[in-house]
Length: 160
Image 1: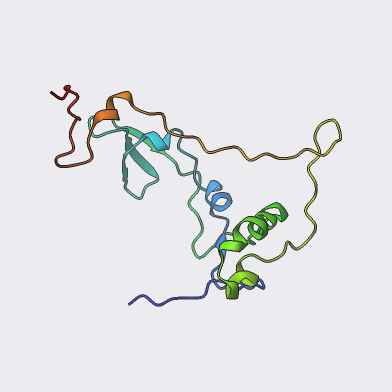
Image 2: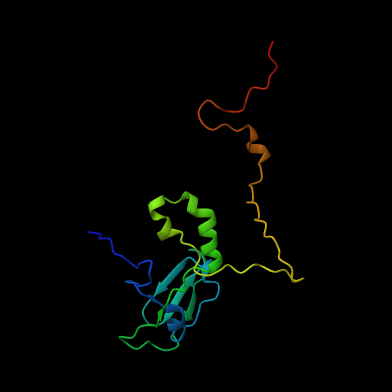
């Protein structure tokens, strides 16, 4: 049965630590170039991995083990950096109105320090204009397609 667990509180203590697995594993294993384009992996416990890009592709064998990691060791614990002052400011100004009143001081607190003003290369303050979201291009062929039963291409024949 799943039971909820508090992972941290707003004043700092963390119940579930985060480990620096990247640094730790890079001591013992080499990285695999182009791993995102491969879809089939076979691990046999010897440090040799058999990789295929797809089911019909030729198999490639790679030895990824530099050293075998010692038993009963763990990586260093990483302290979460927290939110930047700019992110705190954004949450406070833009998101706070949408948060329930009783949760506002927990979720969208006032930034912990003043937000630095952005200065452009000429040494003057620069107003930041948000970039509008990209819109999908219209498909000219989809213009007359219906959305379900009985809504096919409209009859464009002239009425008599």
